[in-house]
Amino acid sequence: MNGEFVAWEDAKVHVLTHGLHYGTGVFEGIRAYDTQLGTAIFRHREHIERLFKSAELYYMPIPFGAEELRLATHELITRNGLQACYIRPIVFRGYGQMGLFPLEAPVDVAIAVWEWGAYLGEEGKRTGIRAKVSSWRRISPDSLLPASKASGQYLNSVLAKIETHKAGYEEAILLDDQGHVCEGSGENIFIVREGRIFTPPQTASILDGITRRSAMAIAADLGHEVVERDIGRAELYLADEVFLVGTAAELVPVREIDDHAIGTGAPGPVTVAIQAAYEDALHGRNPRYHDWLDVVQVPSRAA
Ligand code: PPE
Image 1 (cartoon, protein in one colour):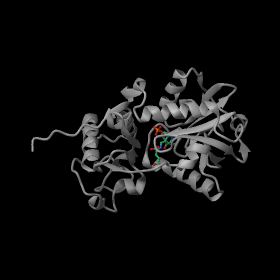
Image 2: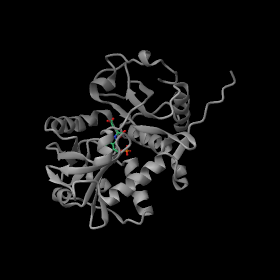
Image 3: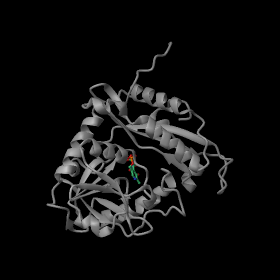
Image 4: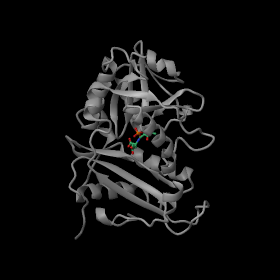
């Protein structure tokens, strides 16, 4: 926290922390894997870069450099003796100033690591999940900044998640303010139809997902055409395959949406192939994607 290593139980903030009241924080979700090259953080630099962009969009100067945050994360993982973990950097307006004008409040930075299993369940990754289109629309770009991974914006995802959970589904799919398919509550979405892969464009209020970019690169490498274009709700039901991608979720097939079976109701061949190649990339099993891995260096300290 703010440049110091702090024990888990001491990593606390004041109840008048600005970000707690007004959602003035931005964060990242990153994963490190036990790979053939050692513990490695997947697309670490891209995640840190997005953190800086998210912060900038909310006028929050981060009082550390990208490289400092990267190396602090290495040291944090090493000190905790973790081989694989989830990494949560958060930058937030801290304690010191209440009221909506935040520019006088300090900008605090913390990074936490912990072991986090399959976000939508191991079985979900294998056999697919059941999703529901939420009645809540994804935040519109004229009210907030969908491209920023900002804490307060997640109230939108939380409402969608609660609604679908109460209705008995595993994940929510949100439409954007135009009624086009946008994304899952914490994942980007892809559909496969007649051999082509489609995913909503940046203009559909999506988060510019790093797993999305990885899946697009992998799909292209596997010889698939990936088209970014608006997707209508019914296209979800008519798709041969649908899958969700995100750091926490990784790649999860969707087997049912709004009680319509997708394709055969089991993960399709394109999904399975991209998922396998993605797992290989995450675990360093394909040299083609080694550039995506930031191998954790044990910090060399004089003492
Ligand atoms: N959309 C949203 C809204 C989102 O939160 C995520 C990540 C993505 C897309 C995929 O982005 P990327 O991880 O860069 O591929 N969601 C993070 C938070 C999950 C949470 O519950 O917390 C994550 O996956 O870490």
